Structure formats: C-alpha cells, structure tokens
Image 1 (cartoon, one colour):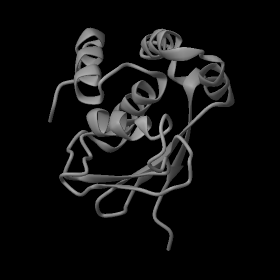
Image 2 (tube, one colour; image 1 turned 60 degrees about the vertical axis):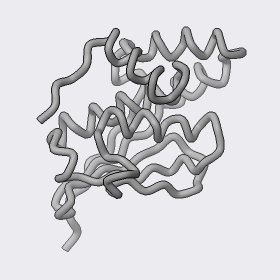
Image 3 (tube, helix red, strand yellow; image 1 turned 135 degrees about the vertical axis):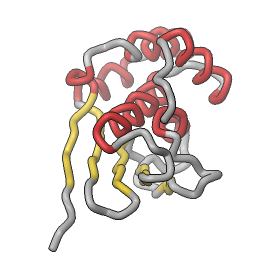
Image 4 (cartoon, helix red, strand yellow; image 1 turned 180 degrees about the vertical axis):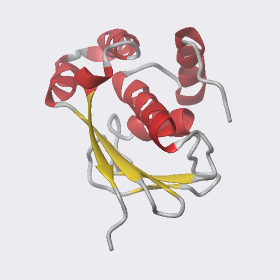
Amino acid sequence: MHKELSHEEALFFLNRFHGHIGPYVVLGYRAGLIANRILGDDPFAKRAHTMTGSKTPISCFTDGIQLGSCCTLGKGNITVSDEGEPRVRFELADGSKGIEVCLTDEAKARIAAANGWDDADRLGRRMLTDPEEELFMLTHHTPSG
C-alpha cells in the first residue's frame, strides 16, 4: 500500500517527525517495517500495542513504530502501556495473526553504552542498516481456541 523509504528518506522523516535521530526511534521504525513484511502493509488492517510507556528515551520507540508501521495514535490503532520496555505486539485487526518484536540483549547493551546525543545519533544511524537478527527477537502469535 505504501512504499518503503530509502535509508536517507527514513532518516529525514524520522528526524522531521521525532526531532532527532536516536536508537529507539530507529528501532521502532524497523519494528514497524517487520510488522508490515509479516502482516501486510495495510495500516487499517493491523493494530499495535507498545509497552514503552511515556518516559524518554524508551518512549521514542513508539514514534518510530508509528512511522514504520503506519499504526498511529490519530487512527487509534496503536496503544501504549507503561511497562518501560522497548517491545511491541502487532496483530491483524481480526486477531487472526500477530507478532511480538523486542530488542536483543546485544541491542540493549549497545544503547546503554551510548554516551550523549552524538553517540545516540551515530548509533541510531548504524542501527538503521544493522542486520535484523542482531537487533530483534520475534515471536509469532496465532489465535487461541
């Protein structure tokens, strides 16, 4: 339904929408792209639930999810719970299929080691192209019953 952005376009729109580049917004964006690949890119056919809460910097993950998946607060197909985790569950609107995306321990350690805005910016830019398996753990869900 919508075209995937080039890396340069993604960085531009993430910066424009979020105000800066950092690892959490980039990883949220990539988590949204994973959902689109697995569940389809129709933004009205899926919903997202992110466990970040509203405390920065982890909450930045939710901004990236909105841009990557097109599940948005305005459409009402994303919700946020205050668990303080960079983790998101996507599912088809009919509940027939879902996926949970969370960060690997390696990705979390890299973020924790970033020191200041410049390090966070560089790390976010690198994480835009790092191999998916180094950054994310995926769990597929199917309907119960």
